[in-house]
Length: 369
Image (cartoon, rainbow, N blue to C red; front, side, top):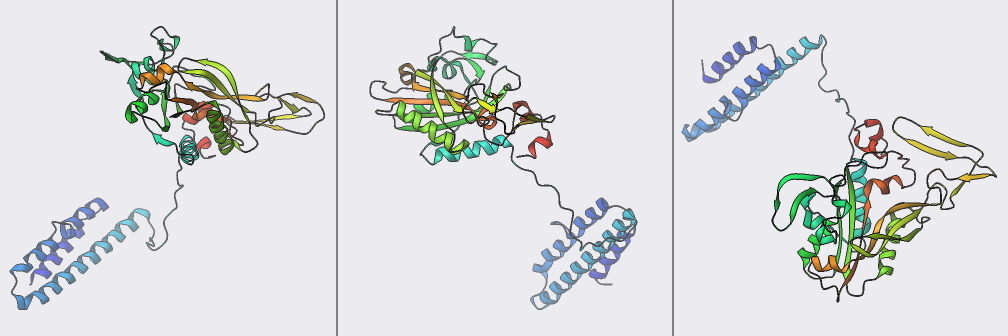
C-alpha cells in the first residue's frame, strides 16, 4: 500500500465518524490547511530524486483532488440530513437588504461638498477640549451663563494650569482658535463639522448634536462677503427660491453679530397659508402638513411670520483674533455656526418635525432617507 492509499483510507475512516459541519471543517484543515498533510507532502518534494519529482507531484495533486471530493460529498450528506431534503448548491443565495448611511451623514457630505466648491477646507477638531478653547479664547469670561454646568457638560478631570477645566465641546467654535493657531497667518477658509454637547432634550434639541462652523479670515473681509457666502449655501442646499436675512443679535465672539433667518418652505415666506383645509398626516415618527387651496388664509403653523431661524453668525471679535494670534488691525474675518439637524429639518420634503427620531434607531425612520 503506497502513501496515497494509506492517507485516503485514514480519511475514509475519519469521515465515517463525522456528524457535524464543525467536525468536517476541522478535518478539512487537517488535510488541506496550511500545515495539513498535503502541504507536508509538498515540502518533502525537495528530498525526492529529480527524475521522480514530476510523478511524485502528480500523485500529490491527484490525492488532493480525491480528498476535496470526499470532503465535499460528506458535506452534502450532512446538509441533506439536517434539512430533510436535497440541497441544490447551484441555486442563487438569498439577497439581504442593504443598509445605508445615516441621514445626518448624508447631510454632512452634502454640506461639505457645497463649501468645497468655494475653496473651504474641511477640518476636524477635538470634541473634548479645554475651557480656554471653548470659552476664554472666544471672549466668554468666567461668569458667562454658558459656562454654567446647566449649559455645559464638564468632565471630572484635573484642570489644566493654563487652559482650565475639560468639557464636552458645546459648539464647534473651539475649532476657530485651533485653526488660527495651526495656520498662524491668513488667508483662512475653513469649515469644521463635529459633534457638540449641551444638556437639552426636547422636540428640537438633543444632548448630542452636530454643528458645522465656517471661518474666513483675510485682509478687507466684510459683511458683504459673509452674507454672500451664507446666501450661496442657502440656495445650494435648500433651493433657489429660498431667501435669507441677517437680523441683529449678540454673541460674545462676534461683533457685529447676527441671527440668520431663511424663508419658510411651507408658506414661501409670506407667513400665511390658504385655509380651507389643513390636513395633518401624522405617524409615530414623523409629520407633514399638506395645504389645499382656499380663498381665506391663516397664519402658517410652522413659522408664524414667514421666516425660520437658521443659526448665528457675525464678524469675528478682535479679542478672538488676538487669542488666535492674528493681528486684528491688519486682518478681519467672519464666522458662523449652524446645526446639522436644524438645517435638515428646514430642507424641503424632509418632513422632520422631531429631531429625536434621528437617534432613536427606528429603522422605519432611517429607511425613508
